[in-house]
Image (tube, rainbow, N blue to C red; front, top):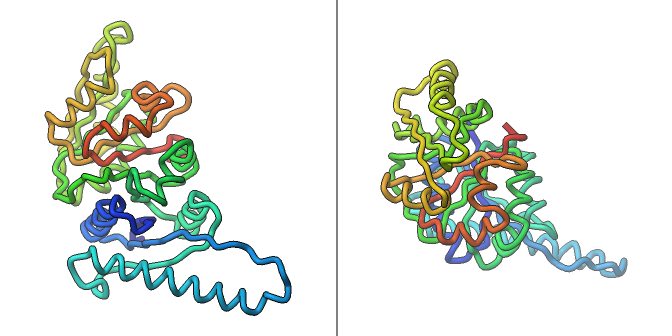
Length: 282
């Protein structure tokens, strides 16, 4: 079955890199791309206004749909008629609910979204909603920073706790790595106090050999008392194109790195797209 990628946009300048990333991924992975815009308009309660309201509703859908298509045409270097892409304007009072509903309807494999957007991500990423999306989305969430450049994916870094639960996320991540023949670097960050010896890594490497069919994988343990800064330095040193993590509750690596301040620290992580997997959805 063909894979499905969903991208939601608000037309802002900061959302453009994520749109381009969604186009590039869908073509490389031969996936169907669905691009949506969530909008809302006031509810009219007067029964006498029902007919003009229905007309207004139809006009609103057409207006937003046409604007969505024009926005994508402007930022896609090619002929949209020659690729597998669908556009849809969706009315919903909650951007988050509108996206989740569409993900479930499409049984989407991945959602691609931007960061620090003016409208869409005001709800999506500024505050608690990013965690709600990661917690609720039945698929991985790929967040693309506003300064990210679309390029060939050569290196993917997966920040791991060297646990069996990582395997499903890695299997899903390889659906992106394999078409690019990208190197997958699996790295575990630990403090000296938390380190329990090389046995954990050797056990995990053996599990990888049993469960994963891909030769271009490297594993590594790094020690640090400041995991976030160490991760940022590691990504730059290894020229990472994507960094991926498994969101665990309540004590996973994402929690250790970001704690309650994920959104602010995402802004200082650099220009690395971040893919989040939810262990409860794998």
